[in-house]
Image (cartoon, rainbow, N blue to C red):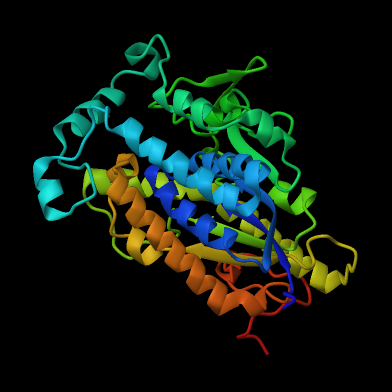
Length: 353
């Protein structure tokens, strides 16, 4: 039986251990024979998922990508066994995945607010970097022609996004994308210093729009846009501030795409690349809202598997619900991003006559 193959591009957010949810999404999408992934843009944990997927794809196609992703996240969990930051006994008994009451977590969290990584870790030891190097063949990543991979970091000096693409994809580029400034020293590449890409692109959408032919862009989001409850504790406030900060660049890019689409419709610019951009979103906001920010540092295997399973379910539901939308129309509306915008001439809201 012949299947109609549809092509998409993926934008993968960062979020520490919550990136295992993205692993689950990718695992399900890679099992879909009717789907082709042309490009993937990732930041932090999203960048790790991206390069691991490309490594596996070059080694053994879609099944190879699935195997490499599973192997990578298993290695993350095994490495975490030796971490001094672990859940407390009550959290384990009660099924709480967070580290909020862990003495070791609270101690290191407090230290990071007083001392910089240069003071706490002058030798710049980074087990995560060693893990990435051990589990990703970057020569193979750079040879991969099946997927265009884009990894975003933030230039510390200029404050601008830096997108690493083939042949710049290295372990250092991935670690630059994941270098949270209170946890890691800035990563230096070719004389420039980089921090976590989430500040300027979480993930960056413009490489997918500019350098890929697919017009269906699927955002895999693990940082919720909206929280119904007002944060009141210091920890809740910090968590919400971080979510807003790491979504800010994404909101701006989505808003730009929406504004351009409006202007293109008004001017009837048939050749404009943005005209037929179709936006989609896979998320698990309802489940992630209940997780504390500290759970992003919990890499226990049962927890990672829980997130993976959640991602698989959400991806399967999205495929079932929105398969017909691919190649036809957007399956998510970001019109709310334009609520405060002055409408260009000829563009009306539904409430206007």
